[in-house]
Length: 122
Image 1 (cartoon, one colour):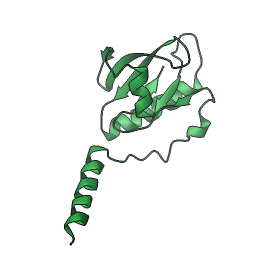
Image 2: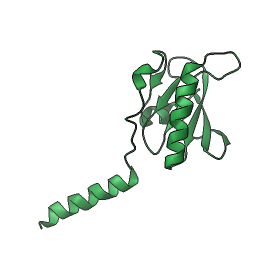
Image 3: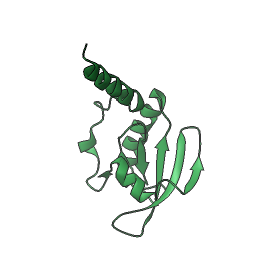
């Protein structure tokens, strides 16, 4: 096998291991309210000032304080831990928070389906 081809394969394998693919095919993102925004990882970096202001953590992940791009509104960005159980939790939380709008329940602002930083913004 050509050395360059082998090297490319090794680099791709390394990338795949660093960023494993997750199955989100059962998520209907079109069913989310129109106001719920799809964010990328780079946007989360900007919103949270590089994830520098951690305001909490728990069994499922860490929570960071951020600021919405279009306003001065403070937001919480919850980034989940890696693992299949956390992916299921993320899907469930996203679906439920999308359904409910109440003064006593945090409002879903957006989500980031990029792994390993599955995140929801409230």
